[in-house]
Image (cartoon, rainbow, N blue to C red; front, top):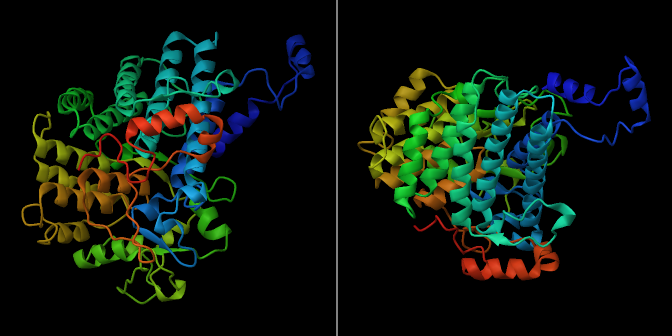
Length: 477
């Protein structure tokens, strides 16, 4: 990323090489007339990764909602008092800010007269892929949201809300167009810190995001789900951890993973692994405990904090040491996630998958464990356990896949929450202090009721009430 930061900084530096260059000395370098698309893309992508990777209770509480972590001295968030804490507002603002940067990046690319057609097509497709990912995230969090009228700035400050299912259909169209518009013989972005200019990797990501979108529709629109999932499979999905949609953070305070600021630089001890998560891992003797959890209570001794209760930090297992490292990679989509979605597709039928649900389930567990550095021997031993082996693990296929999928999404709290909502597995607990129900969505920001009252009221009515217990359209279980 240092290379990228240098490139972006250099883009604003004026060199004295010609009369035109001297003329530009009258321009304010801090407020350039136009900003390169690559600069805006970098800003948007990093904002997206930072928001999704954060664990600040003011911005992102998905690790808590998924019950993989819990709190120590403040338990408002684990008891789901979310709206009064303005957490929906912060998440809403941060993702829309990232989307605005990405939109402006795409506009900048399209209007750049110096870009060759193939390069312009590739850059536009790459930006669209990330936009689609972010829009899906917003729909999955809130349901109906401003979409067609969003991101217009002062030109429209009272954007209407769009139907969530309709947005999904448009996202499937947009990701399809982005994939089809790639020019494989041309270059991509100048500062591609995700895939280092490899267009084939971006094509795999486009296919995988399309597949993920399609599988989210499997319960509510099976025919549309199968149509787009099968097309995505034909394009070629992510096939290894080397294809993952990850961001390489750096070992310094400036460009460190957001967890480093939340867990280390803050000097606070606000979080411990939740008993919900730790108990499941203990029951399965899951070897990922050595990575996900610390051994501060002694070797092979893991005790999770009581979910939703006050917890003495010293009395419970701490978060694993790797999550305190500044250069921990950000991760938004990976091989394990795609593998478990393929397992779901195999169980449902009607999808052109090439293997059985058991094979994809095993592949998902293996991908997760390899990502976190476990040995082949540890993986093989775990897969042989009766509680893990697909043929003998307890429950329905939804319960089997849901359990291992949820575990594999550790440190990706938003996706772990999605797994629970979609598969109704694993069984989560009610918070100890209040017994409040687990949120099925986030409520709309308070600011929307002040600045966009008519439209947010219409959206609330359309979805059946702006409540945390109102499910998003695809959550029918």
